[in-house]
Image (cartoon, rainbow, N blue to C red; front, side):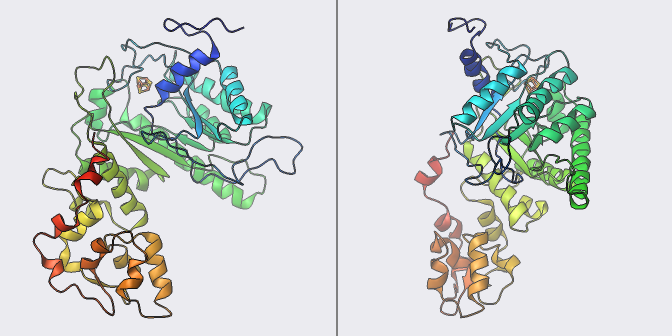
Length: 423
Ligand code: SF4
């Protein structure tokens, strides 16, 4: 039976542990759940939950973190001493530990009450990487096999854990992830001395192969076991070391290409209580995190190479904070504009600041039937002012606008808009 609550000391009740271990998990940004396979309990005698119908919906806390999943650590005890982590061995933080059965019970209980659509489970390292990984796998196994849980499960894998255990994680989880943590190997060696960049990338490589093999088998055999159908992802902490945005973009691009990641998440380092002396005192502006997410979209959905995104950075390798990287690139390469919306290729239309993928698709569909005017484009964008210098329509040509020296100032968002992202 749960003991009475105490405000300090070792947490004993489930709710006390939950308070500690949900708070400890909030620094991990990689909890989005897009891209999973359809799975439901309709028509079966067993099973609860579904990842379809209403689907996995995302809710976000005011700080932008996803809260639609039960997002907890199994424990915040840890034998590692990563400088940027509040749960590191030398941190004077309150500790707690769930048993696998407690996490299973909590997940089922919250799920039945419709509080969550699934579970995001990570952990500090207790005893050893293998021991910890076994405990994480046991939670997922029990949910799937003992309770026929059909909701979403995202498991963090533990650095250096036995590949067999990591494989087990993939058999039960929708998504698996292992954090690369820092954009450069030097940063990792300095701030996470117990972790090994080669080991992390080796685990990602193994996971990539296992996911591919499972997909191939699913095509050939109807009942082939699922394996991490929502793929793998990772997270990079930004602003804790000296890595520039160009370093981060380059690293993200290599991760996407080399390991087939679904997502790279960027998490602005936030100073933690009882921080290590090697860390910066201030967090980077949240706008920096936002600009990196925009650059990530340019690579994944807009056809930019990492080299082109890097061209939007300044001499210091940093993306501008006052304008988005797509506008930054367009202002540097004005000779590529204006683009004729009635004739240009999809690739060039995607380079027009202020036109998103949906808008470009609609332009391409519409222009098959009629010649587009500026007014038509205006219906597809929230900011015609931003688009106008970069396009030609049947009734509009920007003449001298594209060459104006103060174009950046004219198009940059107003100060109040930028302040929404101020640190
Ligand atoms: S391994 Fe490092 S990042 Fe993970 S919980 Fe331990 S100290 Fe924190």
